[in-house]
Every structure is written in C-alpha cells, then in structure tokens.
Image (cartoon, helix red, strand yellow):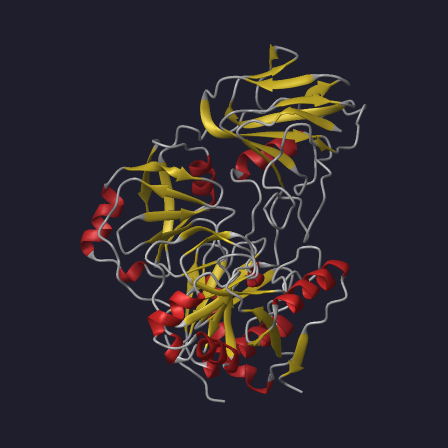
Length: 278
Length: 245
C-alpha cells in the first residue's frame, strides 16, 4: 500500500482512459499529458494501461509500505525521497517506509508517479481513472491507501531517459474542427495571430482562455465533443475540452488539438501563454 | 425508409463525424441508429470503435489507431447505402416515476405561474407526453429529450443554481430532463425522479439508450421514499415496454 500523508492540491490515479461509454455520457478521462504518462510507465516496463498517479500544481507526501520501483515525470516539482532530491525519468528503488514528498513547482503543472506494475485501485467500467461519480472520489485524500504489488527484483533495461522537453512549448498544433468553415476572416485572423493565455478556470474538464475573439451565433444541435475540441461561445470565449470534458456539446467546435498539443496544454497553468498553429 | 443527404468529415485524427440534415426529427434519428447498428455489426467493430449518436449526427471514434480518412470516406458512403436491410431493435419506452411535490419541485409554482396554467395542468402536460431520447451527454446519464408540448415551453431561470440535486426533473425551452447527479443548472425544477439514471456499479451504467422513449408518471412522497429504499436493496423494477417487438 501507498499511504497518503498529505494529498497535495489535486492528486488522482489515471490510466489510458475509459472507453466504450461515451454514448452514455461518460468522459474518457485518463492521463492529461499522455506523453509523460507513457514514458514513466515505459521505464518501469509496465503495460501501457498501468495506472499512474497524476499530481497537479502541489505534490502530496506519500509513504511506501512495501518495496517497489518508481519513476517520476512530467512537471518538475522538486521531488524528494527521504529528503534527498530525485530527478524525473529515472528508475528509483523504494524500500519499505520510504517517504516521497514534493517541494516547489519549478516547471509545468502536472507531474506523474509510476510504480512497478501500476496502482491497483478499483477498475470501474474498464478503467482505474478517477472521475466522479464513476469512481467514488474525484481525488485522493489524506490517509487514503493506494494498493500496489510489492516488487523486490527488477533490473530495468534502461534506467534513465532523456525525453523531448515540451514544458516550455507555447505553440499548439490544431486541426480544423467540424464548424471551422463557419468562421469569418476576422475570427480566423484573431485565432492564428493572437497570443492567448490560460484563464484561472482550468482543470481536467476544460481550459478556458482569457482572450476572446468575435463570438459565434451559429445555432447547432448538440453533437459529440472529444478531448482537445475547442468550442467558441456566443460571447467569443474559447473553451478547450480536456480529458474529463463532456462527451457532447452545443457550441461550435472550431478547432481540434493534436494529441501532442493536449499534452503541452496539460502542463500549462493560469496565466501561461499559448498560440495556435494550423 | 428514405436515404438522406449525409456529410462525412474528419474530426481530429481519431474520429469521423457523419451529419444528417440539421432538423430534430425522429426519422432522422432512426436512420442514424440504423447506420450505427449496421457499421457496428459489419465493418467498424467494438471495442475498437465507439459510436456517439446525437440529434442529427453520428460520431465514430477509433480507440487506438489513427483513422485513414481518405480510405474510409468512399467505404462509408457505400455502407450508408448498403444498410437498408438493417432493422432497429431493442428500443424501449421507460416509464419513470416523478414526485411533483413542492419539496422537490422548488420551481413548480413559479413555473406554473409563468406559464399561466395550474400546477395540476403542468403535471398533466408533463406526464402525458412521450419524449424521445435524442442524445446522452453533458453529464453521465443525462438525456436530451425531445417532444416537450409547446404549452410547457418556459425560459431558463435568469440565474443558474450552483447546485441542483441529483434526480431533479426540470424544464427549459423545448427541453426537459433529469439531473443524474448534483450539478450546477439553470432549468426550472418541477420534481424529482426516484430512479437513478446513472450507476457505475452496473455493467451498463445507464439503462436508457439513444432512440428510447420516456414517459413520466406522478407518484406521492410515500411512493417516492419507498422507491428509494427498493432501489437501495436492489429490488426496484423499472416499468418498460418494448418498442420494436
């Protein structure tokens, strides 16, 4: 078991997501920065679908109650094992009683903790990803215990990895969304020349942006939305749906983020700049 | 049933959006469900593909690999014409109990006043209509229902409530629905449904599917409490009728 001494700002368990229930209104969920999520699992030679911990903004304090191996990745949050700093993307051996804690958020917004063979919290509707009310809780709380299978022997094929550093990337690759063709020349110009910044309304469901463009009065019937769909509201607000985003919506879907752009945006916090490129 | 002019386009790298004429119409919805069933059974197999029908669209999502749109486009057009023999099966009419007591229907009197009808008339109108499920989304288990009688069309509340309780039955504009979980909401709350619309403990977490029909019936507070207990111990039976028998 992994004992939660302090939960951090918003810490969840996530895997690749929950598929097959979108027609019942269930969001896909899953790790926000799937690039970081897949790398931390890969170093431990875990299955792609192994559940990891997603840590947002400020990290938790965790006590390991059995030996295992871990890898950290994503945002840089000054992680400390028994008060000694440990780097991202390196296999670390854990002994019973070790305590992992986090300090200052240096870069990025979401950090990942992978554990050998993944966290074994309940799999509900085919996924361990936290999403209330599918799972009982929306995030972990103090004194929760997360199950994992102890692992004493493991010789990693690669013990350390250099990853593409996308934490400072500001350019988001987009595709045309279903209602892209309804955009006016003025809206298009604004979209692709303006610099936008992340609003304080940002979470696993959606990122709103501070800057607006000309609004859209296009009336449409509710239709499917996907993680990475950018909606334009009548008042000109841009809403970027993320992994916990609703499965249908009624605002024009003007752009669709490339997968890598979802990863990049997942590491942005309130006030950070972004640009769109087609 | 006639074929419609449909448009097929790419929606990101993993999805395809198929759209029918922009009209809320049951024949269109049935054509969408037919096409969806034909694709599921013959060409785009689950669980690799997900199908999201809503009003005048069907979104096809590929779970793993990137969609080869140029290769699929001519095939989808052909498959649309090939689907003719497919029949729709297993649609149900669900009879859902609603307690229209003021304790739950906090906007009941105000809404009746706005509509200039009596509370009894409001309940009669709400329970005599048969609604079609045109989509499920917004929240897990939230149904987009069509078929609200024009006498019940009332604007949303000026200020949305930060918390609408789970089970609240509400009306706004041409829509009526049940909040499947506590959430913010701006519709006029007229009652509460004693049947949970979403339960992740069930393999199928929401018993309703797009294309089904819903009819409400009024229950007393006593019956409402009894249903809650029956639901808790798992003996409550929802009343349903087969539509395609």
